[in-house]
Length: 552
Image (cartoon, rainbow, N blue to C red; front, side, top):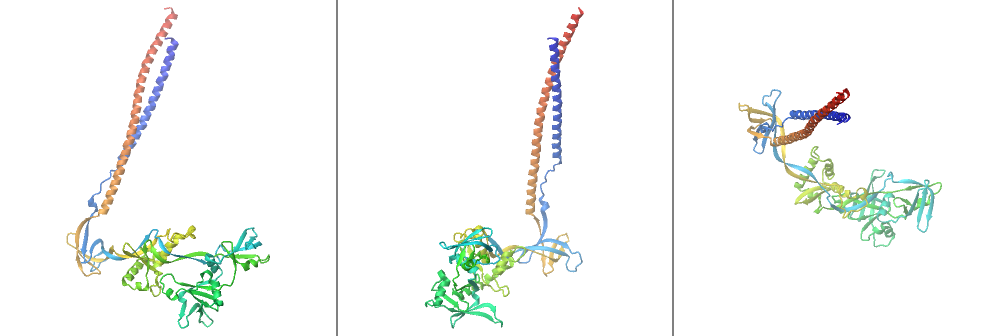
């Protein structure tokens, strides 16, 4: 090997040796980091506390009990009186269990209440959909019998003749006051004449009640009254009904059994008093109404058109079923039953209870009784489910029935008026429930000389009761403690497993580094041996070269 080649090889080996030494230093540093991590895990393990299994003795105590011949009672707490008392030395708290007559409230999901649904319309002048329309242009189309009008903002509306029937009739009645609702209680039958006397609820200047006399209409006579009657009732007119007429006001009503309605125990019965038809023609844009006279009176100077719209509402009657359970409305005669009265009174009392009661249910039940006389007015229903009789109220039934028509479903009649009903139906029952009764009072506790009480006499009871001493374990508390122990033990075991798993991973990494260190040591030794050999070759080449030039 030449001098230059030997020197180049020596330099190469020196560089490789330097690299292996540097890599070895890095590996040692990594092993130090791993050792620190292992130490941290070990210290973490040292700080962990091993869960201790609860001792059942910690949940065991001495309990005093006695019997008064009816109930078994337990002395749950006691403390000495802070001030001297000649007869009593402790304040004690005791409890016992007994059957207590209790009213309860439950709810039925999707009750599927079957009833009749009636749509009504009410007019409110402040209703936000009523508006004034300022007419800037108007055109009448004779062919279609329509009025096309436009306001100053160039909003155009088309009004066509309103067909006075169905829901339109109800809306017109409400908007233009063509009908009036009166309570059947305000009508009195004069049996001598067959007339009905209607008390309007108003008084004259002398303070006397103002009444109207309604006489029967003879529908067999083809006179002006009958013609007027037919014109007023139109499609609703039925010659078989009994109609009554008041000439002073020009109003009619139909007798649907007023005397029977007065006995109705549900929704307050009403009589519809209808004004005679005055021939007014109405036009509508599909939502709002105006009269023909209002349209014809529009001029450039008098160009304000008042559009009117009624508010739709509905009510329910003739409640028949809850699901497949038949409903029965309690009559006054039914309510005379002593058992029914007792149960309902208990239900009402408990619904008024601040802790376990329900304000809405209490109000619904109260509405069924006169607030002054407390007499039953009606509105309570019964139904039998699984051979058990339950109670509900008119207000509860109405709330559930109404929920099938809320929001966008308001104008969609559900199948049989029962589906879907999203508001749960509240229903009630009173039963005997085993209830914990607690009492706190002064008492005289006497001991047996060994630190245990042997008898007790209460402030409100002259009897001295012998106390039974029992050692009892609070099983619920002990089970809770054991569950906590199992949870903590599992948590501890998992933490240990996690630490062991991390330690094993660090150890595996350290073994890999150690193996690499051994490889580097081997490589270092090999490089050192080769470098020494090359160094000898270089030394020999140097020696030979000097001998050549020295002439030796």
